[in-house]
Amino acid sequence: MRLRSFLVAGTVIAATVTALTGNAATAAATRFEAEAAPAVCTGTIDSNHAGYSGSGFCNGSNAVGAYVQFTVTAASAGVATLGVRFANGATAGRPADVLVNGARVGTAAFAGTGAWTTWSTTTLTATLNAGSNTVRLSPTTADGLPNVDYLELTAGPAPSPTPCAPPPSSSSPSPQARVTVWLAGDSTVADPSGGAVCPVGWGNQFAQYFTGNVTVRNSAVGGRSIQTWLYDPNVTSATGPAGECVINPATYSTRWQAMLDPATGLQRGDYLLIQFGINDGSSTCPRHVGSARYQQLLSMMADAAKARGAHPVFLTPAAALTCSGSTAVGNRGFITETNAAGSAGAVPVIDLHRLSYTLYNSLRLCPFNGDYGAGPAGAFFCNDHTHFETAGATQIAGVIAKALRDQQIPLAAYLQ
Image (spheres, rainbow, N blue to C red):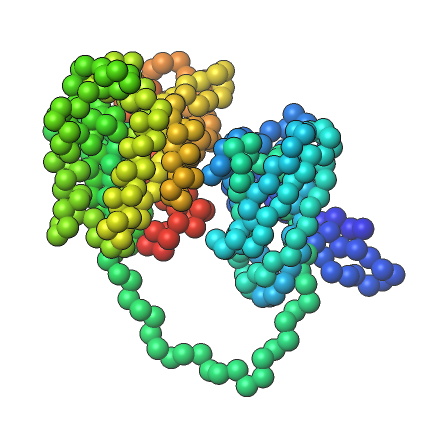
């Protein structure tokens, strides 16, 4: 057996395994490592359990809505065999839906393997398009995925040509419809206030990643929890018997009413991106929001968008810069609640929390000496560890734009 590896900076990107019979080579299997781009792992890349291939494996988040996604290339359209190498040291299976190019094609059981260092391979077949395809494993229980090492693609026989195929259509493609992207969030999303140069939310820099057929309407406001954003100025400092802030009267804020306006608000085909979870963790009213209430309000906003034919997208909160030695680490709450609301309502979730601290690590913002006036952290953040300079906001917006494409959220069709 011959193993041919393609290396970038020491990381195995893919390996082609060719079986040899005499002097003839048979069908090849192409390996795609879970820890290497363009694979996407909603969790962490770990190397603490021996026996993996490459430089590590995907340890997915234990939540419905987490996933690992591979981008694979097929030489021709047709049926292919997909082999997923995994380890499951738990006693129960960790089943996952298998989605190819966004369509569910089956379920992988991912039964227990006896130990996290015992690796096994499960296989299934799927029909792939010629060229680039995505293969996503999405857990169906809150236990999440097993540890995923790699996916191997083995092409089936090429399809026979179709005789007398009709000529391709000469009609021009339909023009792209105009859409509005509405943003609801806090200061990490909001436009700068009063001409200030800092802070600048990522929503202020989002439009540059889209074609001219997209209008971005940024309704994010600094200092808001999801509840104060929805009900300003009617959330009081009093706490009710259920531990939630009292709203009196229960009238929506003008910004949410504007989005709900049937003539000038959310329209069919529009998108509503929602990111809260920073101010909501306050212990006191009016900003405090409990876990169940947070999930309820996210779902309410998503349902309102859907009722108008618009498409909601949830984002977990952007991480602040917290260094553990030379590594940026997560520090926000409401991650589980956001994923749970997304799963319950079939709403896509972009894990901006993980994507943002992963970005900080790629930029080597840690270790950090606390000087926001110089260095890479100073160029990214205002005079704190939370709010962005324009350069930082632009990079966060770019991470979100990439996530739209990586997760095959249809808004990605409008990206430049």
